[in-house]
Amino acid sequence: MIEESGKRRRTMAEKRQLFMEMRKSHILRSHCLVAFCEKSSLIHLVDIWNMIEAFRDNGLNTLDHNAEINVSRLETIISSIYYQLNKRLPSTHQISVEQSISLLLNFMIAAYDRLVTLPVAFLC
Image (cartoon, rainbow, N blue to C red; front, side, top):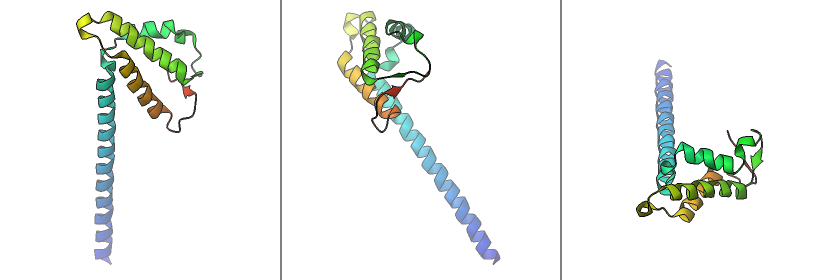
């Protein structure tokens, strides 16, 4: 009887250990995916001033916090961010705007709207 409770404790401890390892690997996979998308879409080059300008140009500063935006408007916002960024970069460091827009848009749609239902909720 005492041996059985000792086995149960070990089994529970092993299950907890396995759960923690699975959780760590899931977090690591998520981190790697976000880091890959950040580097591939070149979003790390965008500074806060580009973001503020793009939000103001697209009227998001007057938008209600609970409002939803559709995918075409999201694409317009992302496009303006990257086109403004490309204007500020030296001609020797121009980026592929269309590729960056496509990658970031697809990542955002997959991250926030797993069922591919429209519109995408605007998160503040």
